[in-house]
Length: 180
Image (tube, rainbow, N blue to C red; front, side, top):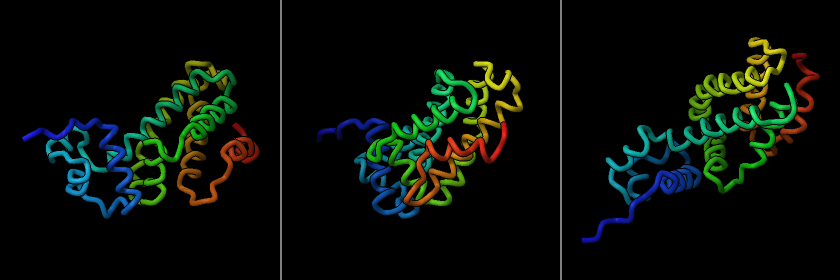
């Protein structure tokens, strides 16, 4: 009897995210994922400790990518935050793993709540990037406030149903609402 082909985490993520989008996150069990991916239950748990990891890991990776983009961005302060987040959002395609993860997140309130827990480490990373660059005069409170506001705007946009606002317009208008 031939062994089934090995599966990668990315392949499992594609199977899972496609099923979550087709049926809804709550309607897909681990048993459904195991069957659709053609793997055993122990193999599934080697890749993910929980079903929600198949969505939330991509949201966490997005946060880390944004923090890295802030660190490398040529602009300073709010322009760096806005540019890094908007560039990162614009780089997501609907059929990418991150794009699918955001679609699943938008459709499931419980997952959106779980994703809020990811913002604390994301905010710390973005704040550290701003501090390392000396943005906002190296003031940790101002750097963290700006990071929190920028991330909050991203969360509001990803949670909105269509039509979603233009991220660049949202970030351009934000300083009018709050002075940093």
